[in-house]
Length: 390
Ligand code: GLA
Image 1 (cartoon, protein in one colour):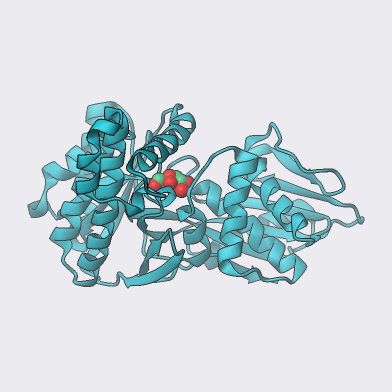
Image 2 (tube, helix red, strand yellow; image 1 turned 90 degrees about the vertical axis):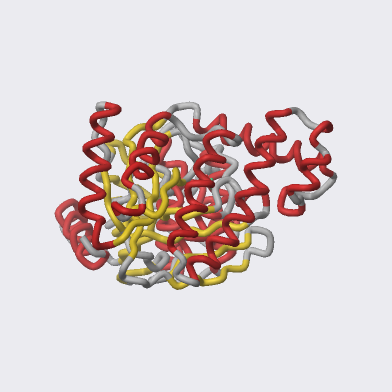
């Protein structure tokens, strides 16, 4: 379903529920990261793109004026109820904390949205490492922009959403996901420098290649605690090296400081420093349409995430292993886990002409190895969040 069809679908559901059409419709995409994993909170580079999967909200004022935002979701019978006259705090209904934190960010800027009835529908797989939470945050922020008539600067908007995730969802994430959902560009990867927060657009329009996303359909629970722990280990490595962040470190400096840090911290830093370099090289290789080189960097990224950063899992390794065994003759250039890890998705760079056959083989071999059905899909690089109707 393209965005237009999806918006019409959500508008229709809203009308069925409320007996009138929505006044506003907004959408924000998920993302897939091609390379540059666990580098954003180290001031490094990332190379993601927005995908054609979205969180969509349809909304209107409630019939009787009251200062409450009620969000019904098509994936949970329990609605999020955000009372604007009370001090906003994290709630036990987990998904409601993403919109709740964004509303708090608007209120903190003196922007009063007023009462709303909202219907949320998301096609971004939940908890699959494709930023379903950032899509929900950015979707909420876009709705509040439409409602208040105040357009935020894109960087400020993304940072407001990141803060919502830190303070209301308790995840100390970097800036990649929210920046991509706000600033995605059709036909382009975003080379985001997380230190300067500047984006360089990298065209990705060669029709002979495409990205294939494969969802392991597993999510290992340790994810969020481990994420915070990795961040702390990176900070420990930077402190031992005497630099503000691992962006400022080189492989040689790390090697010579090896005795000053614990061996686990050393391996974490080795991943980050190598991954920042690989990301810059991959962007250059995409520009040059050097697909074998991009693929080689993707495999190297996966190995580093698996062995040094230890955020992969058996199911992700199984998918990457299958992709590698299909190999260049079968049309696979490279493959790696994408997103935070411990489950979720892999991303593969493949020849478009072989994509259907590769999808079939990935699904069949994965099922055989793990007993689990993978979900496999493609996406072109999509545009960032937008007001569809206002
Ligand atoms: C999650 C976080 C991002 C980033 C990735 C790992 O998606 O939200 O900020 O750190 O993990 O690259």
